[in-house]
Image 1 (cartoon, rainbow, N blue to C red):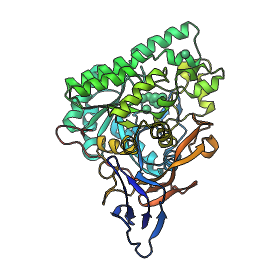
Image 2 (image 1 turned 45 degrees about the vertical axis):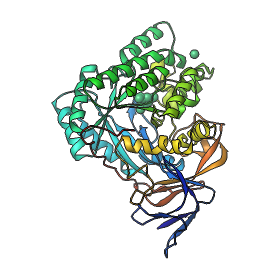
Image 3 (image 1 turned 180 degrees about the horizontal axis):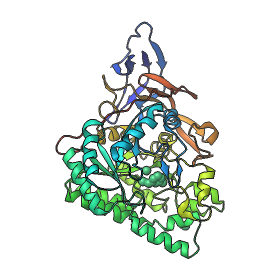
Length: 466
Ligand code: DUC
Ligand code: ZN
Ligand code: ZN
Ligand code: ZN
């Protein structure tokens, strides 16, 4: 049992001074000013700190087999790193292998994730279509606690689906009360541009960005929105990185469609010039999809987050070390796509969002936790400070400043994009299931302590109105 004393609680709606008592079942038991400390209860001093719902990262890829290799953070190291950064839950992606059914893939991912240190859930990718997929989607929603499916409009000859499969999946998801999520890039256009660039002798990381220009994302986002409207089903667009996609989402919402957009802090900080670095490895470390954009797109993303037209922040955490990135030394299309970020996400958004005055602390909570909990039907168990909610909390020091360096981080990868950058805003303590797991620089993550969180289907009428 722990009593968090003297902090200022920040929710997505308001701030107020209060104590929080967390019970041994890992739940919030009481909230109030000057709570009594029951015998045997540990006191956690939160004076001068903000007490916020633990972060939820709705987009990670732990130990994902991808592009001929496997992402280097596993479910233990990745969730532990999340705890060190104030993130207490994540939703990862089940990606069925060749010939593997969706349900078998979900079972495989459940086993991989047994070592997780924090709570987690899964989206399941629909990468092909047959009767088995139709049946498995039903089983996943009704028996397995999966309420969201992922669709890749890119990665031709691998994960990509065509519009007909997307429509079938949307129709099935609508029947089941599940939410469709989408990686929106036109995979045919990317594949065409990649081949052309390689034929011209453009083999370096800069060609990665040239092969995936903003219009490729804008077109796919608009097409996905159009298809979702045809099936009258909500849609969640992952890693929105362009003005075009932001505008498509905002326009759809204006028409009353339930469309959500997710932003990666990485896209708010880095721009396309990272691919100009003369050091191949530094440029290759930034290879992810969608790629970093010209600076002007960042303005649109900030505008979306500030106005509420974009609702969540995630990381697409997908780590590859030097020798893995080296696979693409002579051919940019072979550089494994992915960057780290789960440990830095909250600090980066605080520093660039709240400390600059773009976002209020309440918006920060909404964007790092509450909106995700609502959209993916985890609320009010997660993303909420209320009696009966999970005691997943972060004690935040809004003034603390530190310089980021890979040696001080816990992600199982040999770099951080933010090396040498000074950030204001830091998780002093992270509480997961009522236990202090990150204690001012001391990581007390426990292998296997994380629980699989079942997310119920949505009631008729679909997802939340965030
Ligand atoms: N993009 C990445 O950069 N990595 C993993 C998958 C994705 O879509
Ligand atoms: Zn993606
Ligand atoms: Zn360039
Ligand atoms: Zn991803």
